[in-house]
Length: 286
Image 1 (cartoon, rainbow, N blue to C red):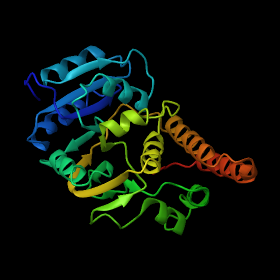
Image 2: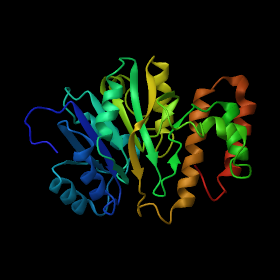
Image 3: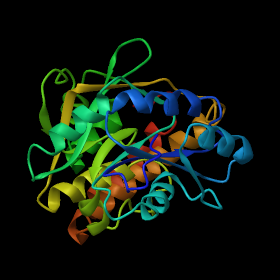
Image 4: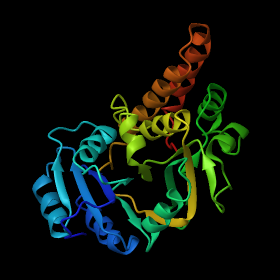
């Protein structure tokens, strides 16, 4: 964390909600992730443990922003980014239950600065068992969305899910349709120009939507496997899997219905709504 009075050109933003168990390891991982002067902002979505989260944040030399209500992930990120100095060029948006590996942030920034058409960079995101999470995916179409929704839980190796998740394509740098908001470096001026995350998404698909809009604005979403982070998970959402699953499918429908809003596509939107409703009853969503 920086004590320099000059604004940092790179900042890290994370959002907490009852995240006392995971925030300390995340904050502890930031200094080794970059040799740069990095400002860290923690935006809290009205946790009951806000005082403890503030103490942990400030002890690590980071800045705590109380959002004032649980507005959702994207809205909290937007509030935090709005507090950053104009000189901040790159913002790493990350879940607090992520641990950055040494030099991960510097590697993402180096990739981002290698080409002015890059709008966002995502690292290789690992699960705690070492498996690679498919964090760099295609923007879903109605066809892949329907196929993934219908078959993902009963035919895991179906072609629509494989294509959407880009399974197996994790070893080399490549362009993606969107990058997981669990850990993504975003070009600040592009983020601001696009109005940040769409706050209509309370949870899930705000990152899909942002990646889609970044691509539509002429910028690239780039997956950089040389930068690594691990998703360790936390306890804040335990016991709420049904609610989260419903939120995931509601957000999926909202995104695809907005993307394919033409009146003549209404039969496909109806089919998508039915497929997602059925899938929401499943026990696992990825």
